[in-house]
Image 1 (spheres, rainbow, N blue to C red):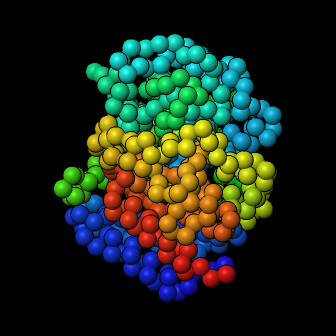
Image 2 (tube, rainbow, N blue to C red):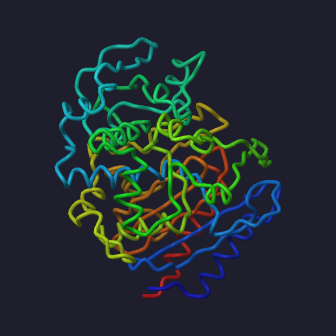
Length: 407
């Protein structure tokens, strides 16, 4: 498999053009696509390291990948399910590992809190059916948290322990549930989530530039965080996931939440090697390491929430407009489902039915099409989420990859 030179040239031009307007375009962006064999079909960096910078964006720059971390946490959880150390449907086990879940209350539309009716399972956490939300995507949860508010990116456990927004198992809402799935991994293994990732996922795949606590070399290559105003103008902003970037001592690191929902920093080319491993049924095409069994990968790509067929169309409000735009529909596919930590959908770009995909808050988007053997990521560091320009480039990117494939 390869990509035609014409397709490569067109895509490179599209990425470069997207960054041409230094004030209202994209400050910098990286796109990478891979095949089942792990070989790169496309890898290109365009624009600058950030708004106001004269340094070019490069393929070696490090991005906060935010919710793209969730898929990695899913891999970790499913490794432990394979080993019998975690169960997907044992609420007693999940709430024993995470006693914080036992006494959670459910926020009602009138602002009152009521007791939850049933236990929370690992499957609920991985499929966003446990009842958790995010304050930046949920007006009621945001308002309930006033005047102090919740900051899901603070690195403090107290910001993750939030009321539920519906009874466990009775709806779908995107939220902090996968952070608790990460806590299950930590408490079942005695390792921090970052340590577990390094030992059981990143090292077997030969990845050296993914971490929840970037080393000095990674921080030296960190892409800058940017903000877009309603009139389209760009400006620089402080990094949203600040604490993991400034902790210095082991004591400070140990006290910082390892966020299974949003904690990783990564070089996009290395993230794509995890996607290539999923394309290749759990076996790294580069190192030969089998990190998941094929049947496990199959289950991750199966719709787990058929009882909520319109979950993606219920709409997400811009509860914190500096972090997200309004999202009326999660993806324009004919069929929508949710696997074990990511969305599953067909779509207009040429992707197969059952393609896995998801995103990261500063406008990163990945997809993984096991049927056609192609995956990729587009990475930026622009807030708020659902930036129209990145979305347009993602569609162009994915479509260009499919139309240019050489079998």
